Image (cartoon, rainbow, N blue to C red; front, side):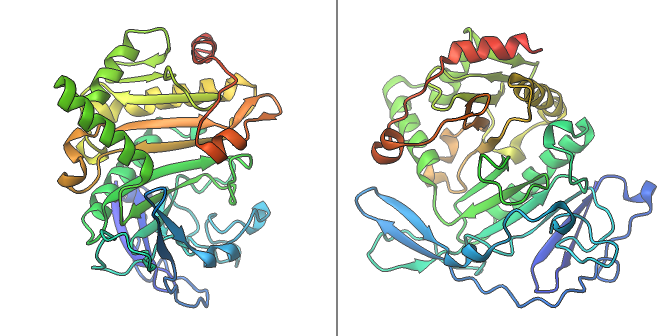
Length: 364
């Protein structure tokens, strides 16, 4: 795989990841990837505001109200540029590309300090938001990619984690994919995103706090203990030599599956060759079963949980894993986050995790 960096018309960086550039005669440079559009430069305008009662940062990104929303397929901004129509990807084809989001939740000011002080005044939401397009084929979902392409995407996630994590002010890197209109996806083209946060988000922060308490009390890593218990239990869905996918015993969502590497691994760059080689096989099998659950492509969020950048944020406690969940609780039925979930933060599930795990095993 070859990585090439060029610029879009408004100055945003785009990264090309070509699987076989020598074989296919692909040449990526400023001339062959020239963006012909007349675009204004992206001016970061997001703010961080601290919710003192919840103890959490909230990002205000009002400019995102104007982002592209569910265009028809022939107007998709993530498809290759061709037939005189210029898109976000200035080339007639591509394997995988990553580029700075045109409507970012976080700005890109280099060297901005992280928001350590939780005062009442807004601060600049420094960081970076990238879009990752998995394929140039508008109609090919992640679950129908080839194992080679999934391996390429995994390498891109690892590369972006390492590069963004090295940027000043970044404390947490979060690769994820949203799929399906029911999830809230605004662009149907198969893609994901990578957020480089200037703080550790609430969910991983809470997990790491519990892991620290568990280590102090028992001397063992909480993530490792949970994985060992699940691997020995009845909720395993897919198991390989290096990865296991299971429905957690306290699943919040109607269908929720966690995918862990067996070897204790902090983040995506720390994956070894054996883990990287097996991941496409296990993950594609999991996605096939999820899509077969209701005889339809399942809308989902697939989110990588990994170590924060800083040691003082609990980096050594973290264990890399992927969490996949859907809001669909049955054919034509949606699990809405209503009063208990939205108002009190208390999830109530209508589905037994053991029943979902058994059904997914049957769909092998």
